[in-house]
Image (cartoon, rainbow, N blue to C red):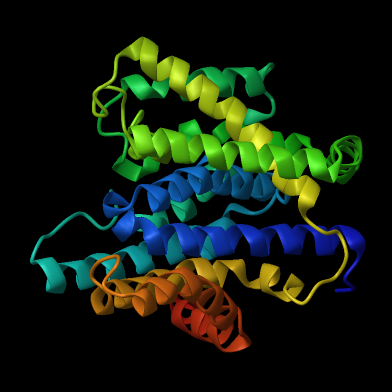
Length: 324
């Protein structure tokens, strides 16, 4: 496929987002010991998955896509990868869990994306579904045990998927053209400062940003939860717009990575776990700190190579063929 300006923009932003996914997961182990890392982590989690899910909705215009295709591309990989994840977790921790009901670490996104795409053709028939989805995102915080089948996250992040579906390239360009890049950079800087302040003062539990915990599980009242999530929705949209504004629309040296985000997403967790094992804590020395901060660049780049696409396809093709 020819790299048009529109395609380049989408691939560029997917590359930027998958880098932040890897970076966020890699520093996750160390954030409790360093408030700066905590602030950076919270900043990333305000926008990276909301914007990723927005892009997923943007690329889901074909609402009549066969459910069989969605089974092959999302549900089958989810089931297989979850079984692999919990098998490895059992050998490491000795603990058992249901690999079908509880998504392992990052795998919730595959399951939620399956639910969003399967239900999209029915959801868009509902009048005022977009404001309703925001309301549901606030209400789902009342329900405990939302991690089962990624139920809570599916509801919390649904508005971003729908926003993406209802947005076309002309609307994205209009937003980008109406906001000066320096305004966007100033906005990003402001958000970083706010995140660092919140982390330093420990004003909110970072797990609130996951969208998988109820308000009671986070130790906050219903009204606090509704208020915080409402503010978070606004901040996520604003921050996502700023990121879109500064994203180049021409072909860059990293554009090709955006075509391989699925393989980076699926395989990076195993490399991250290896780094956790080799570097068990932050501030062991200056070299290990730099390895932690720089390695996401190499992980993202290496996993975007064609060899990992081949591994991915060879891993799932026999099962998909069997299902056929």
